Amino acid sequence: MRVTICTINVGGGEGNRNVVMEVMKWVDVLIVIDGPTTQGGEYVEHECIYYELISVVKGSGVEVYIKRE
Image (cartoon, rainbow, N blue to C red; front, top):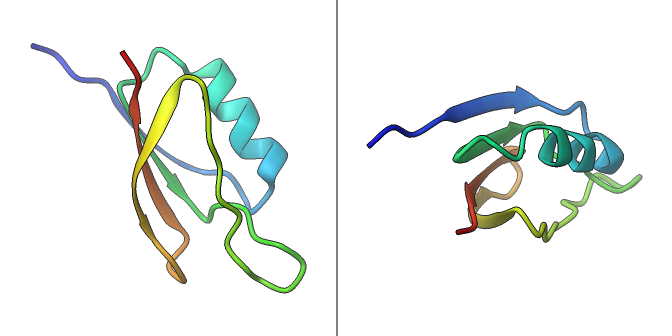
């Protein structure tokens, strides 16, 4: 079995995270660094049709998504 993993810094923009998930939907495990935050610095949760959020470390800006099958 082969698993494709990608780690990417999306730069804090929610639109950036959406684009990455759309373009890289062939990746099995997606690790997002510096995930989106509000103007006040609060974490922005996300649900995607291609991925399921399996881990998030609030305050660290790290999210781990696994591809939905």
